[in-house]
Image 1 (spheres, rainbow, N blue to C red):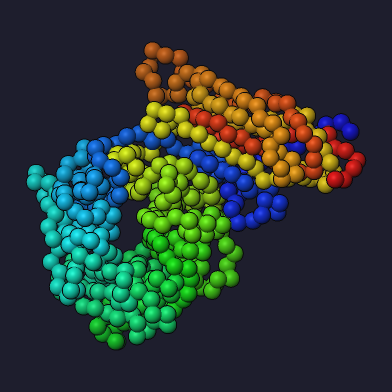
Image 2 (cartoon, rainbow, N blue to C red):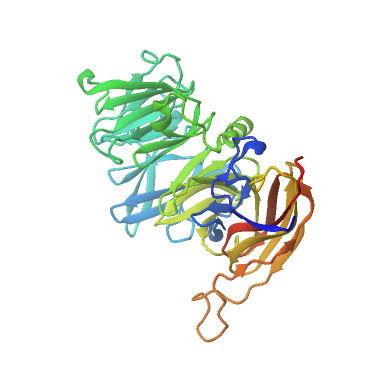
Length: 490
């Protein structure tokens, strides 16, 4: 039978770690590394450039801080046994204070000041004065027997809230007070599981900070308690309005009036996933989430950047990796950046590395001078017919800038790839508006890469595998196949 053309779109459904490979949607991917699922294809993730060097070890905290004099950017790192706090607003590491026992800080901005807790050092209160810089002092706290054990800090309805993570209670301040005299609120009298408070957050019906905000209390048993009101000491102004059960929470962040959480079961969105009482279909990353949580302990982080439309879960594997969701397309993928912590400052995304440096994500570039690797394998598909088939030619269709290496091959019937071949394209000149005018030839924009390649192998289902390196932007749009269909069914 003569070869017929077949076009398969790029995996716009994204990386799927939940479904068995043999039952995947053709729009899903078995592997999708260092790429982002976009509307017209899957594109390379941004690269990054060095922002500041701490000359230390791990960067453990990145803290944006909006003061009345403008936004500041702080970081904290570990250098040997010394943990340090820096102001990196001007892209230099200006020391604020050293000698801490830990550098993983939880933070809130309250009345212009910055409150920090880490579970080992006395809670800190920071203030900024132009010309004098940032000053950090021990926060004034009374009530807890050992304020240094406070590891969770949260602001809700003009009060500051705290928790140690190892007691069935939280602590709350007076109105409009950061710290000060704290009052203990026991949870064991209302909890059905007797768990300890390990996280505090807020969700809202109006998508922001409004009168109907609820405070959400997470226990280490997986129980979630929701309270309405502003004064825990007043029974007429404080009542429990929800009680739920879910996997133990490792990290939460607030976005759009909802809570995004890393749990033992999945990457969840609250209250959506709580209101369905577990009936809601697991996310495509549920398999990766469960496996990673079981395997890796340490500093988990759920980070969201609204401008880029990305939700990034930083997985504390030895070499670090990120489970990424494009919030605009709902397509997940994986990054392999050696990042320890993520932060957002003045609209840009930054991460702290394992080398004592802070880096800034930059579109259409490499990784601090080095090409980065990428990989994608589309789900197996029978190309619309259960008959056995040969594929003499295939064509992955790309638009790219700069140097580009693509190693590709085909796999049949859920087996390993049958072969691999390489296609390498050199840069055709600098991109528009990035080189000096009238000194170099302009590049051709986003030239299409659409060479037909020789196929090999035979089977009912086929999957294309691609991997390579790049230094610039690029988008994979679809794959064209020339298919010879046999009359037999395997």
